[in-house]
Length: 193
Image (cartoon, rainbow, N blue to C red; front, side):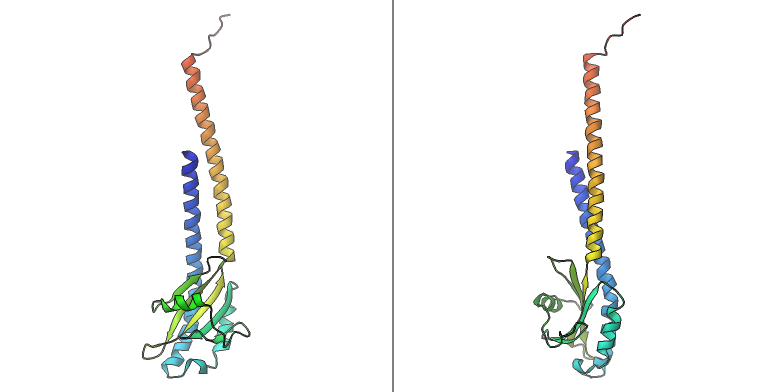
């Protein structure tokens, strides 16, 4: 019973820590998302088309340099076509379907998507013009390697502590049962000298 309780507590602690680490990374990636979004929405508010914002490549490169976890920053239109990207050769290509689906379900404040098979995620936000019509999306693709390593380290540390606690429990229960059995049989008679 003790092993089940320790195992459950350990698993829940690891899952909670993983969730908190990913939430912190997502919040951190919200900074470049908002910086790019504000700059582009200022141009869209003036009536300029999304593709005509000439200073965007420099802005994307500057924002990408702020955090080593950022793998790519992409600006894509409503059809999913990449208009600007920090990755060479991505302009004109389509963003992955899961990104488009997450963007379509998004609230006005933003969206996120996590690759279930890899330690990577995307944070994004819609780009709207002065009439509140969505003209595209900004997306920051980032790695979760540091967070995954921290979760693995915590899991190993908790597993060691849980194993030690289980072993201590087994030894204490064994000692208590042995003492009980010893008392039931009676203390060994002391020899009189």
